Amino acid sequence: MNDIFDDTLNQLDALCNSVKPISNPYVANLVAMGYDRQDCENVAAVGQDATYPRTIHGKVFQTEQEYKDALHEFLNGQ
Image (cartoon, rainbow, N blue to C red; front, side):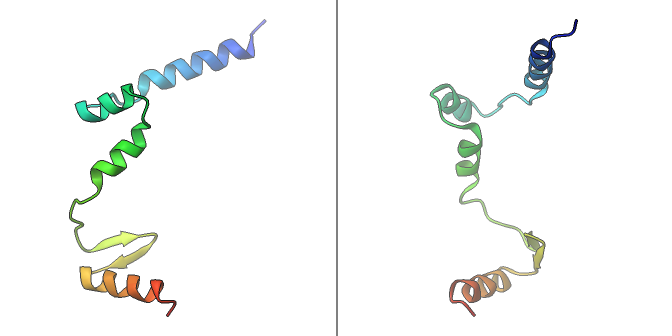
């Protein structure tokens, strides 16, 4: 008889082995301390310059000024 828990455990083990290892030693250290890996990677991406044209949620912004104008309109309810 096939045990559903054994199957699930085997699938989980295969998934964990297929996940890309963390290559950033700083992120690896934070994860070892208990921080969430995705949060660490998102924070690491802050401050990197965006390139244009840029697509955000399906809307394409050709220039940074076009993006800033759209953001201004959104924040001011226009």
